[in-house]
Length: 362
Ligand SMILES: NC(=O)c1ccc[n+]([C@@H]2O[C@H](COP(=O)([O-])OP(=O)(O)OC[C@H]3O[C@@H](n4cnc5c(N)ncnc54)[C@H](OP(=O)(O)O)[C@@H]3O)[C@@H](O)[C@H]2O)c1
Image 1 (tube, rainbow, N blue to C red):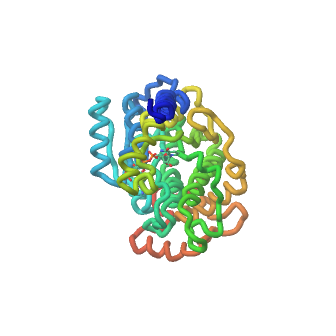
Image 2: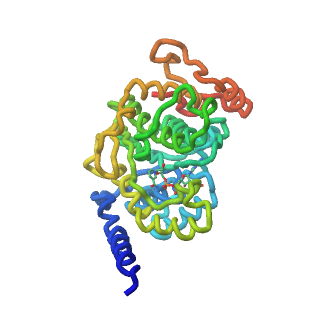
Image 3: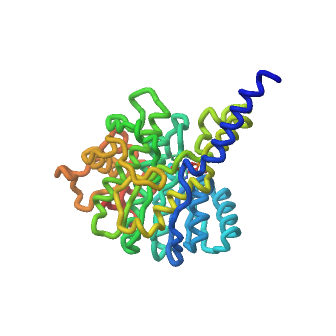
């Protein structure tokens, strides 16, 4: 008997068991059977991965689903597939590039003008470990898309969410937030050497801090907001990592990885749970690890840091406080280096910061 038979069969058995057990270990399906007929859901980055499966599940439950994506061809293909599979004709594709404040403002304006209500906003889109790219407005791509883009979008849709209350906001964060650090001196990686992993972790920490501060500001409005880590899911999120950068990794490692982690369909269950579950009515400001409420990392529990991030983000995206005053009493200013130049660029395009519908922070 070959000396390799025993180790190969042990490895095979362990691998087989891991594949069979992974769905149980990594969290199951949303326990709620709630239907959402008559409710409108806006979901970002819905052409693939977790976002697409979330859109599909919510369409299946009868919702009117608006998919905000940057690539309209991919978005319409996904929307068409979802309409076909769910027999729900109210699934729409709409252009949204979270790396462009102009695009975010146009998207929000369209929703505010054309939609009667927004019951659920799912801030799902994300980019992970990309090179040192900048957004159209000059922000680090991961901080700009994952945090600032969703920060601006949410604020622009807040009046509509409040009118539709009880309504829910769901922010897709990640377990990666636990190693994140907010570097307020250099959020955009202009002074220190770029570290793409840390840039992702910082942006996902920002998602949890944003959730915390927003929940406080929304007390009494009937709008809730929670953050979620969906688990480890086989999606295109790793497209900028080693897993997709050679023929060997694409054809061997990536499929093996996919077999060991959750399918996008199961990866969507936490977002669906937070969007529809009856038991979460009125629950706000929490962090969920898959479908279990957990305490996030200590640096995500710091109210002062959360407030500071909010003030800085408002300034960076051009949202003015309703009073025109900072909470410390000083006037709202450019806030960070580069903001003045950015304001100029936006004005030449005819968009003065804060000019769009509902362009004031709560
Ligand atoms: N997968 C995981 O294991 C995991 C774990 C923890 C957290 N998450 C979080 O879950 C969320 C969904 O990720 P996923 O795994 O489903 O990844 P994915 O398959 O890569 O999907 C990401 C989506 O975001 C979109 N997107 C990226 N940049 C955008 C931009 N500038 N404007 C608009 N849309 C943009 C992508 O559009 P294109 O197709 O056009 O690029 C895509 O639709 C992310 O926030 C991620 O951080 C995922």
